[in-house]
Amino acid sequence: MALNIESMEILLLVAAVVAMVVRRLRLPYTVALVLTGAALALGPAHFHVALTRQLIFTAFLPPLIFEAALQIEWPSLRREFALLAVLVTAGVAASAAVVAAGLHGLADWPWTSAIVFGVLISATDPVSVIATFKDTGVRGRLRLLVEAESLLNDGTAAVLFAVALAAIAGGAVSAASIGFGFLTTVLGGVLCGGLVAGGLLLLAGQTDDHLVEITLTVVSAYASFLLAEHFHLSGVLATMTAGILMGNVGSVASFTDRGREAVESFWEYVAFAANSLVFLLIGMSLTRENFAAAWLPILIAIPLILAGRALAVYGCCAAFTRSINSVSLRHQHVLFWGGLRGALALALVLSLPDGIPNPSVLKTVTFAVVAFSVIVQGLTITPLLRRIGDLPVPKST
Image 1 (tube, helix red, strand yellow):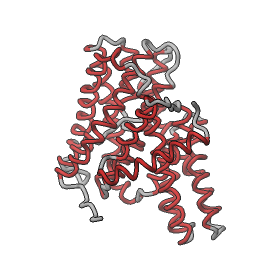
Image 2 (cartoon, rainbow, N blue to C red):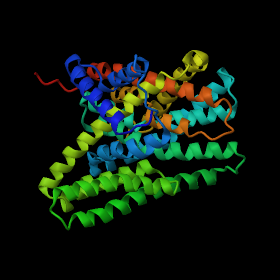
Image 3 (cartoon, rainbow, N blue to C red):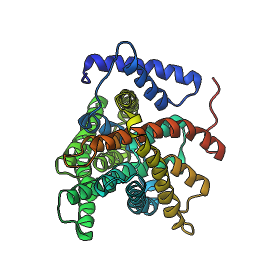
Image 4 (tube, rainbow, N blue to C red):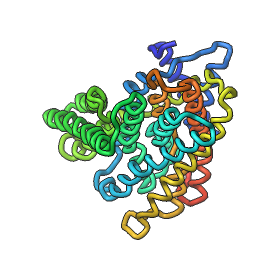
């Protein structure tokens, strides 16, 4: 079944009921949605909506990234840029190398499959990370580091994914071409986001109609993403740039007071609806995978991914121990365990071209890793935050 108006209405109603139930039970909303989605697909009605790469990239990612970027304060992001730059480059590359080498040596995967999987699974997913940290209510530097890293590492993952596919296809790959591809993808995405948001901010300054201001932010979110993707640049970074500009420059110079409040309220709901649909669809998709047929690579892949993430976080943070960007050990633990995988990894594995060995196994293992990440890590991140003392005290009801 395709995601049409009828199915969307049903899923949003289900999401509303789940949201009310988990508030009473104090369960992570994303975990409850995944389990509910699986129950819908396995139930008597066999309700199922296909989760596709196009649906993830064109419908869900732009609004979720834009809404998160609206909340990012530029001065705070600028202070953390050196640390984030190392995490999203050296960290992602190191994590991908650990996963690829491990699957080649332990699961006897061909290098082509191992490298492609290592690249697509090593970048943390902005959708899962942002949703989880909204559930916990964490604020401040820790949330900025976790969410900004998940948004920024898309550029590295996109370049490494393209390089891996080019190498498999027999294309020329060199350090110079990798560096050029990375700079082009990242800077091109930022430029697209800046151009779109800048033009729309000038237009927003000419009106005091809050409905028009909301409309211009919607155009900014999708136009920046689609423009960057059209030129094979980073749509995530384009939309992130647009969101940061709208949230920082727009709130000061372009939006009216009423418009600013309306924009924040509107995007809060859009993020809720998009998150709800994404995780319900992930739950439905999990029911179509035969995990028993790939149990061995799944059992090998999950520890390897955790080991790669540990190397990335603890190794990169160690380089900043004596700097102003130093990260406490307890926050490093959260960066490690909060590096969730989700819709972005699924979108990449669903877009694999012909010629990759064992594509069905790669797809099944990716879905298994996402299930482990969202359910196991999603259920345990709140106790971890509570243990280290970073969880806000819940308000009395």
